[in-house]
Length: 440
Ligand code: ADP
Ligand code: MG
Image (cartoon, protein in one colour):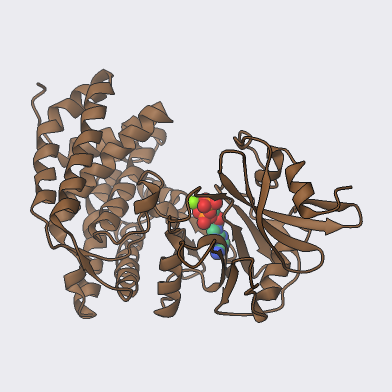
């Protein structure tokens, strides 16, 4: 039996690093592992930050019993120990861990959240979700996007996200950015995410079981929710885009466009190439956006991030981890609100495309009308809420179209790199956004 946590970590394999119920490929780590830091939550519950021989880092919840240490599984009580720690400060001198709490409570019992996930979320006492941020950046100067966002939303009193109970962070030293180790939020019982509820709604519309107004109501609610989220996020400060930044948006968007124009084959490739000029022209609007307002935004905004629950329906925004396709050192930086608006528009469109492709039994015309109206329904409430709350200035409408094209291009990139079939979604979207193009 290893005598110390250091020995346990250094004698462990990469199995230590994956979630408890992992259905994915094993974590890619170069042994041996090394303990970077650890915090004791109770005698039986610890959390460790571990690095491999190449400096990659992971968070590992650890359980200790009479046999020694092992990786915690749901039911071992490590997430529960963290929740119960919210009432006593965890500011261990020297270890670098800091636990901030907005709400405390005594809860018991753990179970896995049981959906596909990138991290490892444990439901504690049917009240709190503890999400361990398993994979960590290897550099200490990278801010986790969720840290400033969750702090800002909680401090601004934003109620459109599951209530924040606490954040566990770790900081190497006072000059480095804190890592997010875990976040603790209220568990929303019976919640569905939008890839589930929105698809079901629009199928029902297409079957005549739901009328158009009812099917468009969620887009309006999300427009209002998004405005309130942006106003809350803007309380952290407003910056303005520099010449270098807007040039950078344009050159990166053009580089992605050039790649798909070169690599996309078949009729979708032809249709895309026929639209390259129109897309490039829209990207010119980036260059004229010097001075446009930048705030903390959601960054990875789509219907899948909107939980719906209750009757009548309520909607909450989740997942402030930022956009995985944006370079890590930029994910936390302020950005135009139009990125979130364009992201949500694209996802409404893709909900419709999924149904047009997979549900031949529905009335396709109704689905097309829904696609054409979901974005405008969102916009109306988004803009109206910003105006009523005296925050029109945080939204630059001109940037929605170029960021929307960039999002569709990223969908093609995702198809090229991961899921070839998915090209039908951006293809359908671009045909409607840029109609009647001559093929070159
Ligand atoms: P990951 O980064 O691991 O994908 P997410 O934050 O996106 O984690 O959450 C994964 C899923 O867990 C969500 O799609 C949602 O279904 C569910 N979920 C997340 N937070 C909550 C919550 N507070 N209450 C209920 N379910 C949640
Ligand atoms: Mg997610």
